[in-house]
Image 1: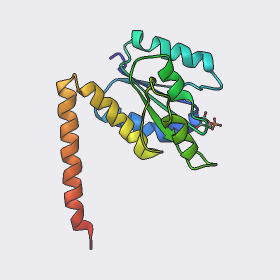
Image 2: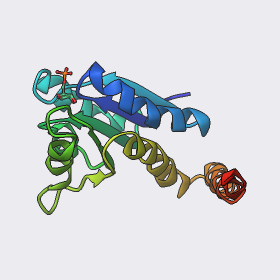
Image 3: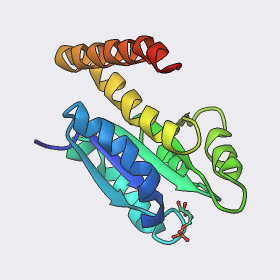
Image 4: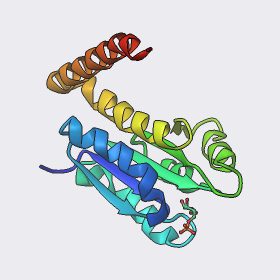
Length: 162
Ligand code: RP5
């Protein structure tokens, strides 16, 4: 199946975080692609990716980066597809630099920014699925089932309090 979600990241070192977004897309059987695209090291590829994504059938982009995390914002500047930004936890500043670099977009060019690290990447996968699920009944049903399973796990976890 043609990919509907594009998962990009600034470096292969971001994969440990970004794989959590891909795990969710796999679980929900959402077709996706993944690629390293660096805002600073491969700027021309970044623009090419952002400009060509819609015509290739991509409907949502998840972009993760750390430190001076300009990838999500610059991709958002070159497409009107929804862009979800994942702040990767950086070594020097624990991801606060990544978060602020991604979240503080100027009015007019939105990036849906999630939390730093694994939780953010997981939510990015879910948010992408929820965006697609707004127009896809089967996917919405899978998302509802997942919420129910999560709820059941929490309720059962009271039994772990020994
Ligand atoms: C960013 O710089 C990447 O997104 C990554 O989080 C960070 C460090 O990259 P590497 O030096 O590990 O390649 O562009």
